[in-house]
Length: 522
Image (cartoon, rainbow, N blue to C red; front, side, top):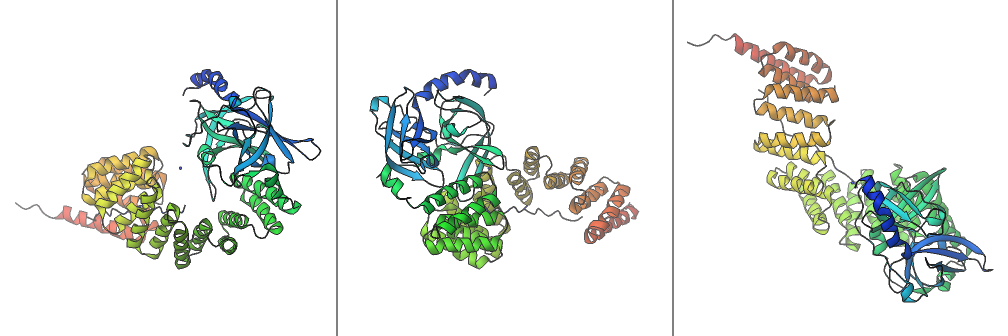
């Protein structure tokens, strides 16, 4: 009989309350949060109202977090509290241009300040949330759910929500049913569609006091109209990037560099957009331009490496990742990408070290844990592969491929019952996983459970009719059951899919027939 080959499935990745109870909690949460929410009012030189937004206190001294774009082009600005009192914004204490965040200081008595604590944990998809705006706005409270948590290239995590957000409520706290602030609301119209997002609390929490300046000094930095316009274009490009409209985002970033050719960040995002659109040569050129302007731009070096890897220029990719690591030794993603590139070059031992370094920096980096298991498997280090896959499963129990590959390792050890359990778990997670059904059948064959094997192989073939390995194994299982006719039917199909496997199955059928024709010894 043909020995079954337990081959790991390779997936290398470059770069995952009840309604009634929640409804009853909303008034209680609103009552707690509302006093901390403020209205932002901005004015031009003549003192005319220019724009408005929302913010909230995050510091007992009167610091407020708001959307940065609300302050652009303003001559002065103030906050209006829940008590109806207004206070001037006097200083800019920190800003995050990519995140459209700014932390401002307000000249306000401490007794009027009720700061909110911000959670750094990401919400679950489907989790119920509410958006709380100043009570005098038309729609003070909006509720919905988290519809997605997206990982935006070059930006990080972004939370998409279903709660409606109007222009005036941009900057409002987004709160879960525990009353925790998990993000700040923002929105953008993209091709006529309103997309509602929340900037995660973890990013807000990183916005610490740094290089403070007066409001007037901050505005003077953008006195040239062309540069101010470039900032607005840049902010719009970022929001289109959040919405995954890469063509539209690209057009804005290209306009930015026309107005300000020294904007390294804009070149970086030109590279990101081109990469997402599959234009890796253009992406590489943009990342190189960002590096020319800002040689210590670690993220640009990292993404340049990704672009080179996509172009098959692996040695250049290695050098780019090494440069990123030299600048930022604790960049887990750069170590991980270096490991993936070593895999492509066949440098498996180097890949192991790169993945281990990524895991040392970021233990929950599941891609590194998973691919470490893959490489250990290729190197025949099966015990270490087992532990790596188990660790990946501890991080995220819902990765079907990790369960499947764990089952394959069990098969290599001859632990077929454990393999069956692992394959079944992979199928529970991903019912249409043809490979897992096939390998489940292989494990059943090894255990002598041929009828169950036939059922598993048929399931794999039902999902993937041209699955040659599964058809071969099904024919083999039929022979084990003494059903030569069904085995021959599989041969007829298989010879159209894979002549080599078909010939191998035919030899098995002939050998089986020959064995049956031998006289019994007395």
